Length: 382
Ligand code: PLP
Image 1 (cartoon, helix red, strand yellow):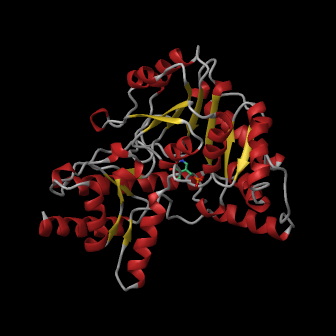
Image 2 (tube, helix red, strand yellow; image 1 turned 90 degrees about the vertical axis):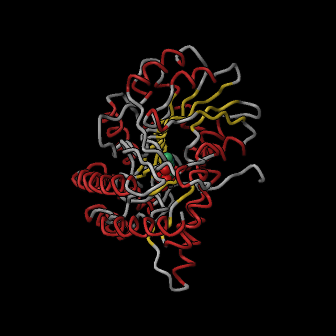
C-alpha cells in the first residue's frame, strides 16, 4: 500500500470545504470537473431508465446498446473500425487505467508516462511493481510531447507507453505529426499504449488525433474516454475503454472482480448522451474558450506568474518560479490567505515543481474574483 499514490485534488477540495465551514469564502479552481449541469435530455433519459426498471445488475463489459453506441461514436470521430466486443464500460474512465495497468504490467516492467501528468498513472505503475519511467512536457515547447525523449527512453523492458491528449495538467495537445513519428518506432515493438483521451472533445485549436488511427497500432492501443468531461457527467461515473477483444475480456473479468458492472441506468443515459443532440458539448467548449482567455490574460498580469495558453482541456499550468517560492508553499498560501483553491504542480509529479494548476471550469465572475484575490496576495506578500 505504501507504493500507492493519490489524487491531491480531492484532498485540497476537503481542506477548502473545511475552511468554508469555518465561514471563509473560497473560490474553487482545484477540482477538474465542468461546472455545468448535465444536459436535460440526458438527465431525462437517466430518470426514465430508473422508472423503467434499469435498476438491476448488467453484463460486466457493459450493456450491449451502450457498447454499440460507443463503438459507433469512437469509430466515427476517429475514423477507425470499432466492434462492440472491443468496448468495456466502466464507472468513469479512471478504472480503465487501473484495469489496463493491472492486466498488462508485471513486476519490473517499464512504463513510460508523462510527468507532470495525471497522478494515477505513476501511482498504479508503482502499485503493481512496475518501473515508472517519466517523460517531460516542457513549457517552452507549449507542453507538447518530445518524441525524441520518449524514443530515447524505450528499452527491452518497456511494456507500455502512456499518452494523454489533451493533457491534464498542462492543456498540451499531441499533434498528429508527433504521433506519426512515434508510430514509426512503436510499430516494431511489443509495447502497449494507454491513450488517455478523456478530453478529446475539449480542443480549442486543431483536431484530436489518436495513435489508434495509425497502421499497426490499433491492436496495441487502449483508448480511455468517457462521459465525465464531455457531457459534464462526473458524478454519474460513466466511462469506457476501447481495446482488442482478448484484452477486453480480461478487463471485463477484472471488472467482475471489482464492481461486477457499471450502474445500468447511467448506461442508458450514456446512450442518450452519445446519440442525442451534441450542441451541449459545443456550447460548453465555447464557454471554456471564453474563460481560458480571461484566466490566461489575468495570470500573465500577476507579477511572478507566467502562463501559456492551453490548447485543450480546462486547465492552465502557470509558471510561478518568479515568486521565488516553491509550488506547494504558494498553493497553500493562496488557499489559506487568498481564499483560492488550486493545486501545486507537484500534485502531478516531481516535474510539476515551479507550476500551479488552476481549473477554469468556474464562472468568469469567479475567475476574475480569484485573479483579483491572488493579485492582492502577491502584492502584499512578495
Ligand atoms: N484521465 C484524466 C487525464 C483525467 O484528468 C481524469 C479526471 O480528472 C480522468 C482520466 C478520469 O475521469 P473519470 O471521471 O471519467 O473517471
